[in-house]
Image (cartoon, rainbow, N blue to C red):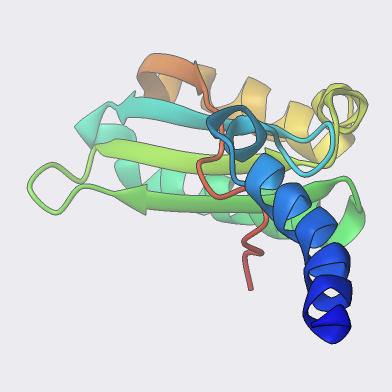
Length: 134
């Protein structure tokens, strides 16, 4: 019987911690102070090929040169390839702010301004923040 109580005594705190970590508030907390957002763009059809080339260059440079840029993953809609969504994950708000000042981002931003019909930045909250993007 003592062994049973000892086991319960040891497992109870762990169970309470697991329960607290699985609460809705804990589930909405990012793993750190990451900034996670979706960039939703619509590109003018005549500019799509040039835009995609500029975007590819910018993403490759950002991921290679900036440790604070964790993910930039772009997709286009099958039914409307001019609609592009980019999943952006930065290590922190400071990493995002630094990204905005890099030469490769400024080249992309300034070079594609006239190609972009619309841009919407959607701030998000990761639903399973501990999942790592491979």
